Length: 222
Image 1 (spheres, rainbow, N blue to C red):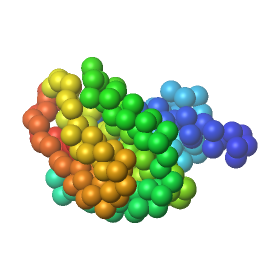
Image 2: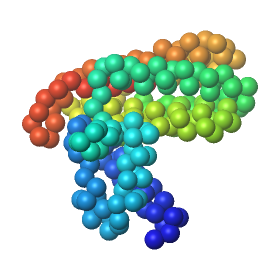
Image 3: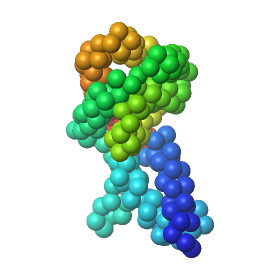
Image 4: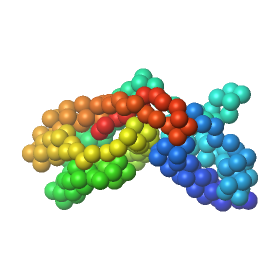
């Protein structure tokens, strides 16, 4: 098996497992077994281990001595850490992106914002929310920064799906509206203040896992 083939398989495995983790199909603390996953994907352990490393880098899995690799569990402190990281990185990205935000980009961001306001389920809202943020930040033209933000959004999506299993009701995101309004008026600093607050807003909900266990789920709501 070539290195390129192994990398392609590792990519596919990590994407599939990430989706299962994000949507709650794999519960926090559940073990990711190399043998089972290698058998499922018809591959050796090499790309599976690489997939695990990618999931760890994204904050979706943790490697523990004598316990193997498990789906990450998030305490309030860990969720707050993700929120603070998002705040620092997205504020930096928006500062650099703002001079390059055209009316067309702002129109596209408003379309994503409207889609989020009218989302019928949590997956639809999450996709619209991520698109909104990405549209406003991408013009910073800093690929590594954007990749780090994408990873944090992936972690945030996982938390959101776990906390949102109790149901979803459409909601208008007033912060998104304020950010776009400030940017249209050239008020970049005001937009940054709202963004900084927005990505650090954390909600808490009781959660019932498929196993019957109960717990508290924390999620970044912006």
